[in-house]
Amino acid sequence: MQDLTRILEEWQYDTEQNVRIIIAEDGRSVLQVRLPLGIEQYEMEGRPDRREPHGFDTVLAFTEDRLRRHIVENGSDAGFEITVENAEELQAEGILFYYRYLLLYQLQYFDLVVRDTEHNVHLCDLLERYCPDEDARNAVLQFRPYILRMNAAARAMGIQHSTIEGDAVQVLTEAIATIEGLEEIDTPAFQFEQVRSANYLRSMLRSMSDGDDSTASPDGSLHDELRDAIDREDYERAAHLRDQIRDSGRVDKER
Image (tube, rainbow, N blue to C red; front, top):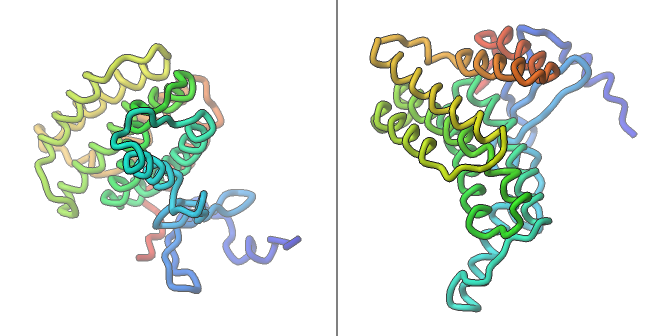
Protein backbone atom coordinates (compact mmCIF):
# COMPACT_ATOMS: atom_id res chain seq x y z
CA MET A 1 0.00 0.00 0.00
CA GLN A 2 1.23 3.50 -0.85
CA ASP A 3 2.15 5.96 1.88
CA LEU A 4 0.60 9.37 1.11
CA THR A 5 2.91 11.35 3.39
CA ARG A 6 5.09 12.77 0.60
CA ILE A 7 2.09 13.79 -1.49
CA LEU A 8 0.46 15.54 1.44
CA GLU A 9 3.69 17.30 2.41
CA GLU A 10 4.05 18.69 -1.12
CA TRP A 11 0.70 20.47 -0.70
CA GLN A 12 0.33 21.47 2.92
CA TYR A 13 -3.17 22.20 4.15
CA ASP A 14 -3.75 25.94 3.92
CA THR A 15 -7.20 27.46 4.32
CA GLU A 16 -6.22 30.16 1.82
CA GLN A 17 -5.09 27.73 -0.88
CA ASN A 18 -7.13 24.58 -0.52
CA VAL A 19 -8.83 24.30 -3.93
CA ARG A 20 -7.10 24.23 -7.27
CA ILE A 21 -7.42 23.07 -10.86
CA ILE A 22 -4.27 21.50 -12.26
CA ILE A 23 -3.15 19.82 -15.46
CA ALA A 24 -2.50 16.11 -14.94
CA GLU A 25 0.35 14.20 -16.57
CA ASP A 26 -1.83 13.14 -19.49
CA GLY A 27 -2.95 16.71 -20.15
CA ARG A 28 -6.42 16.57 -18.65
CA SER A 29 -7.63 19.11 -16.10
CA VAL A 30 -8.54 17.90 -12.62
CA LEU A 31 -10.05 19.68 -9.64
CA GLN A 32 -8.31 19.08 -6.32
CA VAL A 33 -9.39 19.94 -2.78
CA ARG A 34 -6.86 19.85 0.08
CA LEU A 35 -8.48 18.72 3.30
CA PRO A 36 -6.85 18.66 6.75
CA LEU A 37 -6.15 14.93 6.43
CA GLY A 38 -6.06 14.31 2.71
CA ILE A 39 -6.78 15.35 -0.85
CA GLU A 40 -9.90 14.88 -2.95
CA GLN A 41 -9.60 14.85 -6.74
CA TYR A 42 -12.46 15.37 -9.16
CA GLU A 43 -12.41 14.86 -12.91
CA MET A 44 -13.53 17.91 -14.84
CA GLU A 45 -15.26 15.80 -17.51
CA GLY A 46 -17.52 12.78 -17.19
CA ARG A 47 -17.99 11.21 -13.79
CA PRO A 48 -16.13 13.02 -11.03
CA ASP A 49 -14.48 9.75 -9.96
CA ARG A 50 -13.36 8.79 -13.51
CA ARG A 51 -15.08 5.43 -13.32
CA GLU A 52 -16.97 3.94 -16.26
CA PRO A 53 -19.92 2.02 -14.79
CA HIS A 54 -21.13 -0.84 -16.98
CA GLY A 55 -18.69 0.33 -19.66
CA PHE A 56 -20.34 3.76 -20.01
CA ASP A 57 -19.19 7.25 -19.08
CA THR A 58 -21.94 7.48 -16.47
CA VAL A 59 -24.74 5.42 -14.95
CA LEU A 60 -27.10 7.92 -16.58
CA ALA A 61 -25.66 7.07 -20.01
CA PHE A 62 -25.99 3.36 -19.22
CA THR A 63 -29.63 3.82 -18.23
CA GLU A 64 -30.37 5.86 -21.34
CA ASP A 65 -28.82 3.11 -23.47
CA ARG A 66 -31.05 0.52 -21.78
CA LEU A 67 -34.05 2.72 -22.58
CA ARG A 68 -33.04 3.17 -26.23
CA ARG A 69 -32.56 -0.59 -26.70
CA HIS A 70 -35.93 -1.26 -25.05
CA ILE A 71 -37.65 1.16 -27.44
CA VAL A 72 -35.95 -0.43 -30.47
CA GLU A 73 -36.95 -3.92 -29.35
CA ASN A 74 -40.51 -3.07 -28.28
CA GLY A 75 -41.47 -0.10 -30.41
CA SER A 76 -42.06 2.18 -27.42
CA ASP A 77 -40.93 2.79 -23.85
CA ALA A 78 -43.93 0.92 -22.45
CA GLY A 79 -42.80 -1.60 -19.88
CA PHE A 80 -39.37 -0.10 -19.33
CA GLU A 81 -38.42 0.09 -15.66
CA ILE A 82 -35.54 1.40 -13.61
CA THR A 83 -34.85 -1.18 -10.92
CA VAL A 84 -34.12 -0.31 -7.31
CA GLU A 85 -30.49 -1.29 -7.87
CA ASN A 86 -30.25 0.97 -10.94
CA ALA A 87 -31.97 3.78 -9.01
CA GLU A 88 -29.46 3.48 -6.18
CA GLU A 89 -26.60 3.69 -8.69
CA LEU A 90 -28.14 6.82 -10.19
CA GLN A 91 -28.56 8.34 -6.74
CA ALA A 92 -24.92 7.66 -5.83
CA GLU A 93 -23.78 9.19 -9.11
CA GLY A 94 -25.97 12.24 -8.58
CA ILE A 95 -24.27 12.84 -5.22
CA LEU A 96 -20.85 12.82 -6.91
CA PHE A 97 -22.04 15.42 -9.41
CA TYR A 98 -23.53 17.43 -6.54
CA TYR A 99 -20.18 17.65 -4.71
CA ARG A 100 -18.45 18.72 -7.91
CA TYR A 101 -20.92 21.39 -8.91
CA LEU A 102 -20.76 22.97 -5.45
CA LEU A 103 -17.01 23.42 -5.91
CA LEU A 104 -17.43 24.62 -9.49
CA TYR A 105 -19.95 27.21 -8.33
CA GLN A 106 -17.46 28.43 -5.75
CA LEU A 107 -14.87 28.73 -8.53
CA GLN A 108 -17.44 30.54 -10.71
CA TYR A 109 -17.33 27.97 -13.49
CA PHE A 110 -21.00 28.59 -14.06
CA ASP A 111 -21.21 26.84 -17.44
CA LEU A 112 -19.87 23.64 -15.85
CA VAL A 113 -22.33 23.95 -12.98
CA VAL A 114 -25.11 24.11 -15.58
CA ARG A 115 -23.69 20.98 -17.24
CA ASP A 116 -23.57 19.02 -13.97
CA THR A 117 -26.96 20.15 -12.69
CA GLU A 118 -28.52 19.27 -16.05
CA HIS A 119 -27.12 15.77 -15.59
CA ASN A 120 -28.95 15.52 -12.26
CA VAL A 121 -32.14 17.09 -13.65
CA HIS A 122 -32.23 14.46 -16.39
CA LEU A 123 -31.52 11.78 -13.79
CA CYS A 124 -34.59 12.97 -11.86
CA ASP A 125 -36.73 12.94 -15.02
CA LEU A 126 -35.84 9.33 -15.77
CA LEU A 127 -36.51 8.20 -12.21
CA GLU A 128 -39.84 9.99 -12.09
CA ARG A 129 -41.01 8.35 -15.30
CA TYR A 130 -39.56 4.88 -15.10
CA CYS A 131 -38.84 3.89 -11.48
CA PRO A 132 -41.89 2.15 -9.99
CA ASP A 133 -40.40 1.90 -6.49
CA GLU A 134 -41.62 5.00 -4.65
CA ASP A 135 -38.93 4.99 -1.97
CA ALA A 136 -36.07 4.62 -4.46
CA ARG A 137 -37.60 7.27 -6.72
CA ASN A 138 -38.33 9.84 -4.04
CA ALA A 139 -34.93 9.44 -2.40
CA VAL A 140 -33.69 11.54 -5.34
CA LEU A 141 -36.77 13.49 -6.43
CA GLN A 142 -37.14 15.14 -3.03
CA PHE A 143 -34.05 17.19 -3.87
CA ARG A 144 -35.15 18.25 -7.36
CA PRO A 145 -36.13 21.78 -6.21
CA TYR A 146 -32.56 22.36 -5.04
CA ILE A 147 -31.07 20.96 -8.26
CA LEU A 148 -33.31 23.24 -10.32
CA ARG A 149 -32.36 26.17 -8.11
CA MET A 150 -28.63 25.61 -8.61
CA ASN A 151 -29.11 25.17 -12.35
CA ALA A 152 -31.03 28.44 -12.63
CA ALA A 153 -28.64 30.34 -10.34
CA ALA A 154 -25.63 29.17 -12.37
CA ARG A 155 -27.30 30.07 -15.66
CA ALA A 156 -28.24 33.52 -14.36
CA MET A 157 -24.74 34.14 -13.02
CA GLY A 158 -23.20 32.89 -16.26
CA ILE A 159 -25.36 35.33 -18.20
CA GLN A 160 -24.24 38.17 -15.92
CA HIS A 161 -20.62 37.12 -16.45
CA SER A 162 -21.17 36.83 -20.23
CA THR A 163 -20.15 33.16 -20.29
CA ILE A 164 -23.70 31.97 -21.04
CA GLU A 165 -26.23 33.49 -23.42
CA GLY A 166 -29.76 34.28 -22.40
CA ASP A 167 -31.98 36.47 -20.25
CA ALA A 168 -31.17 36.08 -16.55
CA VAL A 169 -34.53 37.41 -15.37
CA GLN A 170 -36.39 35.00 -17.62
CA VAL A 171 -34.23 32.09 -16.44
CA LEU A 172 -34.96 32.83 -12.79
CA THR A 173 -38.66 33.55 -13.34
CA GLU A 174 -39.20 30.30 -15.24
CA ALA A 175 -37.24 28.31 -12.67
CA ILE A 176 -39.37 29.68 -9.82
CA ALA A 177 -42.53 28.68 -11.68
CA THR A 178 -41.12 25.20 -12.38
CA ILE A 179 -40.10 24.65 -8.76
CA GLU A 180 -43.45 25.81 -7.40
CA GLY A 181 -45.28 23.65 -9.94
CA LEU A 182 -43.51 20.40 -9.04
CA GLU A 183 -45.71 17.55 -7.94
CA GLU A 184 -45.49 17.40 -4.16
CA ILE A 185 -43.46 14.68 -2.50
CA ASP A 186 -44.43 13.93 1.06
CA THR A 187 -41.03 14.36 2.68
CA PRO A 188 -39.71 17.18 4.88
CA ALA A 189 -36.71 17.57 2.56
CA PHE A 190 -38.90 18.26 -0.49
CA GLN A 191 -41.17 20.71 1.30
CA PHE A 192 -38.20 22.55 2.77
CA GLU A 193 -36.23 22.63 -0.49
CA GLN A 194 -39.20 23.74 -2.56
CA VAL A 195 -39.86 26.81 -0.40
CA ARG A 196 -36.20 27.63 0.15
CA SER A 197 -35.23 27.30 -3.50
CA ALA A 198 -38.06 29.47 -4.81
CA ASN A 199 -37.31 32.11 -2.18
CA TYR A 200 -33.60 32.09 -2.97
CA LEU A 201 -34.24 32.65 -6.68
CA ARG A 202 -36.67 35.46 -5.83
CA SER A 203 -33.88 37.04 -3.79
CA MET A 204 -31.60 36.84 -6.82
CA LEU A 205 -34.29 38.52 -8.91
CA ARG A 206 -34.63 41.34 -6.39
CA SER A 207 -30.87 41.82 -6.31
CA MET A 208 -30.79 42.13 -10.09
CA SER A 209 -33.67 44.59 -10.05
CA ASP A 210 -31.87 46.68 -7.42
CA GLY A 211 -28.64 46.62 -9.38
CA ASP A 212 -26.92 44.68 -6.59
CA ASP A 213 -24.10 42.51 -7.92
CA SER A 214 -23.57 40.62 -4.66
CA THR A 215 -25.06 37.53 -6.24
CA ALA A 216 -21.96 37.37 -8.44
CA SER A 217 -20.17 35.79 -5.48
CA PRO A 218 -20.86 32.17 -4.64
CA ASP A 219 -20.65 33.16 -0.97
CA GLY A 220 -24.33 34.03 -1.04
CA SER A 221 -25.20 30.46 -1.90
CA LEU A 222 -22.76 29.07 0.65
CA HIS A 223 -24.13 31.27 3.44
CA ASP A 224 -27.62 30.08 2.54
CA GLU A 225 -26.40 26.48 2.71
CA LEU A 226 -24.78 27.17 6.08
CA ARG A 227 -27.95 28.57 7.60
CA ASP A 228 -29.91 25.58 6.37
CA ALA A 229 -27.34 23.11 7.76
CA ILE A 230 -27.51 24.77 11.17
CA ASP A 231 -31.31 24.72 11.09
CA ARG A 232 -31.17 20.98 10.37
CA GLU A 233 -28.57 20.53 13.15
CA ASP A 234 -26.22 19.05 10.53
CA TYR A 235 -23.15 20.45 12.26
CA GLU A 236 -20.63 18.41 10.30
CA ARG A 237 -21.98 19.92 7.07
CA ALA A 238 -22.08 23.36 8.69
CA ALA A 239 -18.41 23.13 9.65
CA HIS A 240 -17.48 22.18 6.09
CA LEU A 241 -19.49 25.10 4.72
CA ARG A 242 -17.81 27.51 7.14
CA ASP A 243 -14.47 26.41 5.72
CA GLN A 244 -15.70 26.97 2.18
CA ILE A 245 -17.00 30.45 3.02
CA ARG A 246 -13.71 31.37 4.67
CA ASP A 247 -11.77 30.08 1.70
CA SER A 248 -13.92 31.53 -1.09
CA GLY A 249 -12.39 34.46 -2.85
CA ARG A 250 -8.94 33.10 -2.10
CA VAL A 251 -9.11 30.07 -4.33
CA ASP A 252 -6.21 29.13 -6.56
CA LYS A 253 -7.76 28.99 -10.01
CA GLU A 254 -5.22 27.48 -12.40
CA ARG A 255 -6.91 27.49 -15.76
